[in-house]
Image (tube, rainbow, N blue to C red; front, side, top):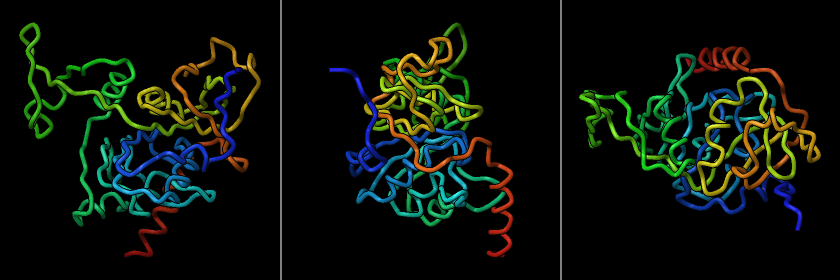
Length: 252
């Protein structure tokens, strides 16, 4: 039977996400690079106690009718969030509010360390050695290993049950290419979970993606779902900043 990883809709793509699942969420920080429609589909599921792994804690501001990772905090799906940049100077987001209220756990991981822990999971490694965090709270409870007279922290792999990522184009085998800054953690997380689900702008025929331009080979992708609506090509940070300022002024 021919390989075809394309699923009919967003609901089918996330239907088996379960209580307590650990989920990688791709993107760097803004809606334009996030798997926003997959996140919204998860927010509609009857699930709880999720553990999220992401670079950003989210803004929690709706743009172009879509949301970022904060939609899962807004719908009370999250038990723990492993994150590099949990807060931002523009607005008090939902993650910060819930953490300060004692409603969820948060683990902060340096951005580079997070990326390498995810890559270690994809590669089947036992962990990575890094000097980042030595002598700080990040060292607490972790093994220190000395190599050539230098000390390193042993950081364990971050393997998830599901990875939700966003790409530009895909074929039915699951080969992916990205556009602009959306590559970041989307490409890093592909294959670092038991099930990788890619939300894409466009699905093309086999052979339309040249081997030199494919960033994520289909072997790392389990499901592909096409986004609904036209989508947006440009980064949305300026729009996020504008709406964050408006929201902050209203809450003042």
